[in-house]
Length: 252
Image 1 (tube, rainbow, N blue to C red):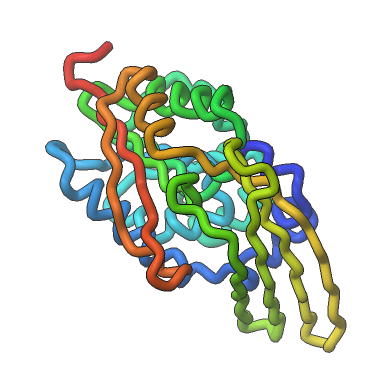
Image 2: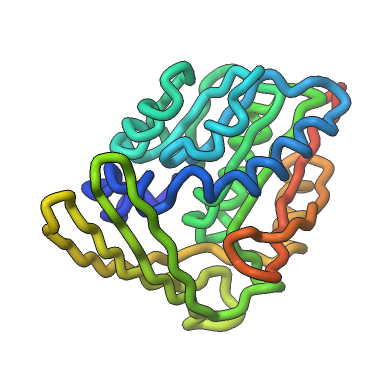
């Protein structure tokens, strides 16, 4: 993730991540991303995951692929390493990292939500282009786009085999209509096996860019660009946009 590393959810609370947001909730998005990979003209065997978080999407995509997982948060990388022990994990900022190698595909899932300015989004897309081999692709899967955003309320959570339970309430709003960010206000309720309860409120600023902005910035970076539509399993009757950039086979 980018600036998301500053939030408690991805720092001191990172160990709760698999309980707050269980891996099964990522199956739908992973299936859509896997279908995009599967339709590529050449096999997608190597993937750079920018902002892997707890590694929940990677867990669905890693079979038959070599995945390199990058995140700004050391705590979230530790969570992902438990779930994806065979994957390479690297701490770094998706806006500026340069690994000196290229991949069949570059992925940025909902971590891209923490990019809140067009300048920073352009930097992330440039990172993706730099790491995408000629003929490869980049896939971006933001939770929100300005064209379809509607303020609302959501909830979720889960439990694990140790007796821990977690739940959260999320309220989303657009405090300054017309800009490129929205506000997500959370209240996390964390219950230990011994019954101790911790309630943590936290407000996150998230990016919400227009479809045309995404496509323009992808093209400016050197990609051909397209948008894919799919139902968002976390929001009933909501349509989620994924953006795909393809690097020309002859590009150097």
